[in-house]
Length: 260
Picture (tube, one colour):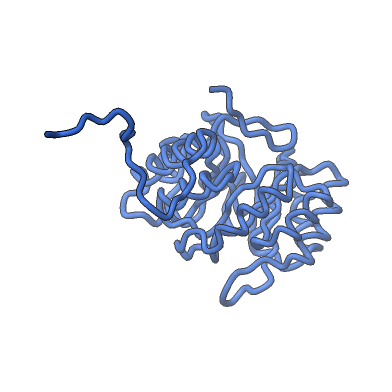
């Protein structure tokens, strides 16, 4: 099936995006990423060494793969910081494929600052960046981010790292209806079934980090996520049966032989 994920000018066959944080070492990060089948890995460039050759770096670790790096602005708290960071990243690496993440509450919820995110999206998109914008699960804001130039909108399923799964399924469905760019469910995924549910709701992709990196067996969980995203996507495309209040026999009653 030729079912590709198109984000801006980038095309991917996998709809799973993975993160690079919280692993014990870069070797495990690479092994889990390859096991997941993901073609995109997001990297907090303010926290992870991606290119300093004086010590082990992530770019070198993934040098022999075709994994696309997705730098993110984790740690930035306003538009100015994020814009400056991504300009520096593009100058240093040539990468303009980015995940915009501006956190408003850095102490408890790690919820995004949507006002600052919208401002940064407008500026970065005009400068030629392919912006994947992390946001809350608000369909109105999702549409505004699309109008501002976002190439994909990434609503949270639940607070970052919580593992709670999708807390408001209706909002994910509403966002899907509101925008034409890809919807990537981000943050809060705890296990493979959460990823499958997100895809069954119509999400175009899922991003997960903690659920894999902090699992008792990260490699096994990465593989589980791969199949969960595929299964959820196929289920969504196949079309589920309507929900009914009462039972419906699997076999028709017409022509049923009478017992004497």
